[in-house]
Amino acid sequence: MEWFNSLDLANQKMIRDLGLIVGSVLTGLALAWFLATLAGVITQERRDEGRLSTWERERRMRLREANAFYRWFESWMRELMPITRRALAPPDDESAESILAAPDEEEAKKKKKQSQYVVMKKLLKTAAMDDWLPEEFLAFKLIESFFIALALVAFLVLTSALLDFSMMNAMIVGIFLGLMLIPLYQLLAMSEVKTRAAKRLAEVKRVMPFAVDLISLMLEAGADFPTGLATFVKEKPGNALADEFAKILSDIEGGGTRVGALQEFEDRMNDPDVTEFIYAMTEGQTLGVPIAKILKEQAGRMRVKRSQWIEAAAGRAEVNIVFPGLVTMLACLLIVITPFGLAALMVDLPKS
Image (tube, rainbow, N blue to C red):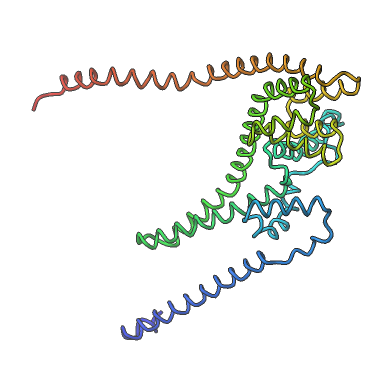
């Protein structure tokens, strides 16, 4: 740098300005290349559409219409899906019995890992997100987390420039936080799916006794089973159980059997109480028992189960409220004791 220091101030300033201009041009070109690549990915022609089944094309169309981010970065997701699929290890045999029947511990661990794919698939169905494939959902969240991490790095760099901090340190901290954010975002996404599935299942089980009562009364009045389902769907628009009954009606109207539609509902809910109800319905129909009689018996059982669910929820609430109660008692105790403690300290302090 001796040659630079030997120059006068005017030349040094000119060289600095020239360096800033060149750096700005190179940065602009890199940004333009990135945006052009991004635009090419977004507008890339979907060449595999012709080889897809009708169901797969409709599934993808529903996701594109519902989510603009999916529509823009679908090509990226297709590239990432083999990686996320290997991470989930989809099973050849999805039965839980295959895990128990494994010949050794290593095989059992492998089967248990494979079951993660099945668990996630069932959670997506219960959460009314059954248009998503498990590996597709994880790839989508991976791309989302990448852009959030990128935004975090950009925010820290811009903030450091405005507050006159070291830009390099801000970039290092941003990259470190971004790398931590990516796996954390995946865990949060899975937690969100589990929470959504649990809430939806609780809503279904809460309303189900009333729905069974209504359909039973309508069948006794001379209506048929699809009419009873349609009535409940009209009475409770937007309800989770009404949405499920609408899917059952759609399956029946599409040419499916009543038993098949009910079993699809059972598979989406993946709950023992719903399974018991569906089993009673399908078994009664197989044995020739009138469906009105089956629904009347199930309505009585579900009222009893609903009382049991409420008692179980009250028991859980009683346990969950212990810690907040202790914190509140401690806070009240501090409020009462603190004035006396301060007064005692003031008395003990030496007078100047």
